Length: 407
Ligand SMILES: *Cc1c(COP(=O)(O)O)cnc(C)c1O
Image (cartoon, rainbow, N blue to C red; front, side, top):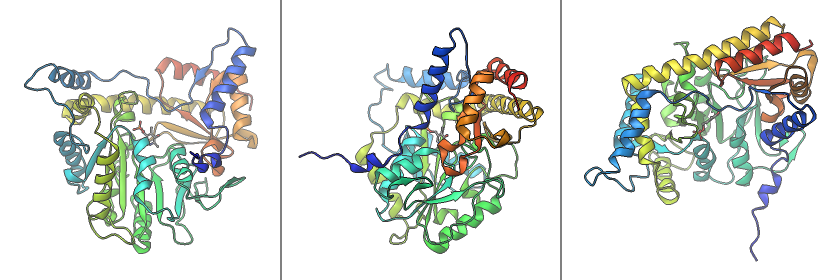
């Protein structure tokens, strides 16, 4: 008899975004003719820049000629793109070889899949709040018990609070896999070099592996803040990094990302090179590579003109974040994030729960955001606003908050 994977039944009911959609639709059906302004989901809104469109076109055109046609490429990615990505790291003072770069179709799928090369009995630590896939992929893999009031049994939650400026303390005991995301979704906080160094030192002492998600690295404007964990001494021994073209280049629908597995990265029972060869094996077994058209677009993102044009687009989103921050602060609301990240993390006024604030913002201002509690227990009492949006929509949402929110 075919039996299902029972771990799926452990997933906490009411996934965040469907519940947001349900409440929004209910509001719209009860208030006909009303428009809502969405600062909820973290999806890009501005068109792909011209130099990258050219790169995508080159990818298409090369498929129409016998001489330049290509079929399957290497599962790890086209050499030219892997070299461009490695070159980008080396410029930042992070020593990465092209053979350590694995191109993929998404950092979400990579962050879900990467746990598969580790043992089932690894103890997993996550920042709380966190991007949900880190938790859910480990629940499905059977590394946790059931979900209760304070999260899943067996999972180590590292609270990110106002008191620790949204960067966690080191785990008390020994953990094996540690998920870190900086700039952080949802809090918008960015780890300093010293903060990352404390985790790198912990990981080396405990033979743990850090899974570092830097999908928003291009939003860092403060030059003292690290864009890659490999800027930290010792990280090549203990860290795997995931990054993506999604937010940097508007590729959320195009799909292109990469994962770095250094050859020097160790595990408790694995010497140098083993994790690298397991991920090579995993990708070659389950994956046939990212689209060659899309990889051609990725190459242009990393060229000088592509960097200049995508850099201006990232700056545009950061201006949106600054408009959101000023508007909320004018209402006396405490906000975090936004300076080096496309998310503003606000403390709900009058100690409202995240969902009560969601309803208040929707009914009073017609603005949709994301309840912090949907990202983990420590997100309760906080709320995420996304800076992805057309300028006029962001301005309209902020004006509505300023005029209509009753605090
Ligand atoms: C958007 C996002 C990604 C990117 O995922 P893709 O699958 O590459 O689109 C990765 N990590 C975090 C935290 C994100 O918010």
